[in-house]
Amino acid sequence: MSWVSDTQASLQGLLNVTADSLAEYCGLTGNQQENSVFLERQLGLLQRNPSQSVINSFYLASVSEFCAKYLPTLVDAYNAQDAAFSVPMRMLNVVAYLPYFTRFLLTTAKTSIYPTSLVEMCQFLSTLLALEGPNPISEEDKQALLPKLREWDRKYQRQQITRCLKQLEGDPETTLIADGLKQHCERSLNQCGFDGCGKSGTSKLLQCSRCKTAVYCDRDHQKKSWPFHKATCFPAAF
Image (cartoon, rainbow, N blue to C red; front, side, top):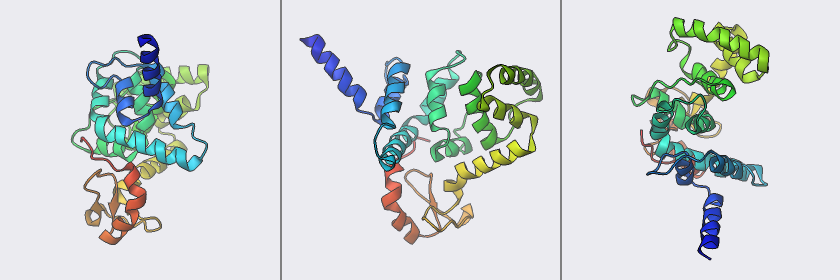
């Protein structure tokens, strides 16, 4: 009977997706071991609602709260891994486009985080190259990486690898696309978040004191935006 109860409790816990449960399956809380299978199932559950608007709001709220509470710990866990692919890397790929991640890279709490594995690695590295540029990579590392990327590009023909290769090679078109991605990722940090406003100029904008990932040109626009912003607004741990 206890086995049945334990199984039911485990199943119920798996179906209840929260920021804390995502952190648990990433191995970030207590003595809990990471569980890639359960993490993938919870990420899948976040995207299975029939309504696209429900998907967006619930998904964004869950991963935003996760970022606000656990992003520094996730990065530390990633840096402690020696494996070519890891659960922390998988989760970093999930959150790499959120304003919490962009802000983390811009704060003094940021860490040097460059990965070392194929498609997931190239996707992640491509995002970092777009947000930070190629300068953090030494010329020696770049010259060592380029032949490998060319080999993987020929062998696997995956767009993530191709894009990463072209970024490191300085391809003008890919650089332009990367600049567009950077502007998109940083928009909420330097452009008024009120729908239809878009005023920029970070020195004059009011930053959300809670999450620090949204700015507004005045109190009125901040107040009017709150019903939409509150779903992804959480106190940041960095």
